Image 1 (spheres, rainbow, N blue to C red):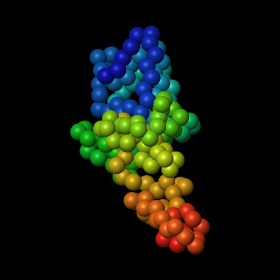
Image 2 (cartoon, helix red, strand yellow; image 1 turned 180 degrees about the vertical axis):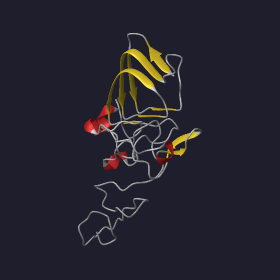
Image 3 (cartoon, rainbow, N blue to C red; image 1 turned 30 degrees about the vertical axis):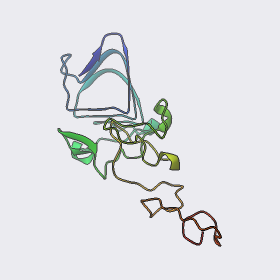
Image 4 (cartoon, rainbow, N blue to C red; image 1 turned 90 degrees about the vertical axis):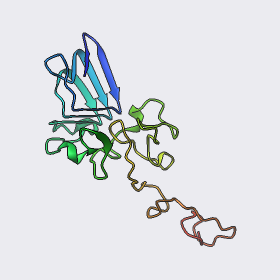
Length: 171
């Protein structure tokens, strides 16, 4: 549980799930302000003032600021094995739904809680996932010249006759 008195708590790309705390049995309790960015809070109770953006909070229907409507979701819609494994399942609605700007110092070398790349396909304008773990499921970057090629093979031919983008041997 997370708690504070007259304090400010900021959580970025965090997952808080199935927690209870000593203050009114709340997982997040603060007399100050809790700010959540790119985070998942599910299976908990919370009190105090909260500001959140690009996050999923259990029971929340507010979709402003990039938040996801969580009113119809269960932990099984998000996590691979709720209660024991909080990595994201393939169809989790939080994949590619974060905001890269909200993660200070994010670059191609940033990692998630498991030590995996924080953003899949960062160099192809990849988008950060919400929560502590980046999805291991591979999406399709929007500007990828080979969207069907998950290995991202770029063909090189010294005398290409096509567009020169490397998407095929002729190019």
